[in-house]
Amino acid sequence: METLIDIVLLGFLVLTALAVAKMQDLFAVVMLSGIYSLISASLFMDLDAVDVAFTEASVGAGISTLLMLASLKLVGQYEKHSRYRPMLALGVVLATGTLLIYGTLDMPHFGSAEAPVHQHVAPRYLNDSMAEIGVPNVVTSVLASYRGYDTLGETLVVFTAGIGVISLLRVSRRTKEEEKRRVPADMQQQIILRVVAKMMLPLILIFALYVQFHGDYGPGGGFQAGVIFAAGIILYTMLYGLSNASRVFKPHILELFSALGVLLYAGVGVLCILMGGNFLEYGVLEHDPVDGQHLGILLVELGVGITVASVMITIFFKFTWRTVKHKYNK
Amino acid sequence: MDFLLDILSGIFLAGGSFFCLTGALGLLRFPEFFSRIHAASLTDTLGASLILIGLMLQAGWGLALPKLILILIFSLLAGTTASHAMAKAALKSGLKPIDQIGSGEKGTEEQKK
Amino acid sequence: MNILGLYNYWIVVVLMMIGFYIVIAHENLIKKLVGLSIFQTSVFFFYISMGKITGATAPILDEKWQLYSNPLPHVLILTAIVVGIATTALGLALVVRIQEAYGSIEEYEIQAQDTQDQMESHLEAYGFRKKHALSPSNIDQ
Image (cartoon, rainbow over the protein chains, first blue to last red):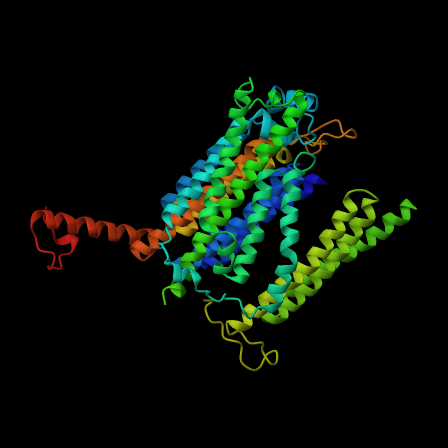
């Protein structure tokens, strides 16, 4: 039964990708890419990858679609007709595809338990994770503890992307009186939307905190929680206007927080060195190594969540400021 | 008792799937935007709620039950608000419902701002 | 060579090639970014399909289950998804700035403007006055 769902959903994915290639209305292309992300999230669930499905649904169908729509508003909605027939591109694509399919003929079958990938490191993680780290969700224990160094690098990548967007979409320094001016939101007439969003916003933020701290026992963790938190704030910003949201989430405080998350993560590693262990060896943080692992994973995931949330909110604010810039310069 | 629960949840799941399918059929066959959104939003909300109730009957007394109840509440709130937002956006950008099928003027679609 | 056994990987290759085609054949920058994200997601499927074991469950330890799917590809792809969104955001910011600098986001228009700017700067270096409307094809170097 799982194979049937797998086959049908993969067929849908191919159809969606072909539709994206054909269409010229970029708005429809962005919507189709959102559908593509949602179908891939359900496929990931079917393939037993629950954490990945969670992340793909929140990131791909949420933030990615939002950012593309925001940039569509700035650059224009239609793609111009291409001037030539891309025969060379088709030839290259077909040749590469044929070679790749020829290469997959030697692969182990889908779902077989004797494949080489299941032999060496993975059984050790699955068998020893409960005894060494004591966290039921093996993905969290591998992400935050066994491969914690990679996750530090990933947090740094998110932080770097935030810095890149800040320096590209620079906001010119506003004078004090411009900041005081309350620009009315675009959506002042949307009363139903505003009321429902106000009702749902605390629940969205509580859900983000739940996902953050429940990542040890079920699907969840720092990334998903950060993205969900940012999505709640973005909903508020879209309905109540950028100036209202900027009063609560001031830009320089957001930049401070995005650096603070990375500092927390690396700081936990340095703290482990100061207490006698290696970098990011959480066992030395407490008397009982398993308790030390729990504390280390908690702090580290908190750092990741803080950075991801602040960077996503900052990126959205920068994009939105560009679209409403003309209203401030009256 | 288990057998009864299974049959009941099967009925709910089948009913929910039927409504979702008819919603999709309406989305394809109706002639213009407002009737399509009417078909899609009503039947999708009902279909999703029936499917969730069928899953609740299967879940039993555990952690999954309150989570499913919360999902039901949120999908009712968010789905209907999204349909309202779509209809309001369409009205605001100038699309008008047609008076009679097959006669009268179709609404003009201005490019969204 | 069971078709059902390798179906996943073939579809992954098809998706990868569609994404690749969008990136190299289309000229609109935003379309290229969407094609790139389709390419990335197909690679994610490849990894996750390799990690799945039939009859196993998600890698969250529980007494009722004995067989779990491989958690290592999940960790790698979690990282990859977040890095993907970071690069997409940066790419979109670049596209916005390109639009402000060149006035369009079609690749050939941007290249034409670049070539024109280069020609004009060459002309200035050689001492021609900028007022003359010289087209690049009339220049004898």
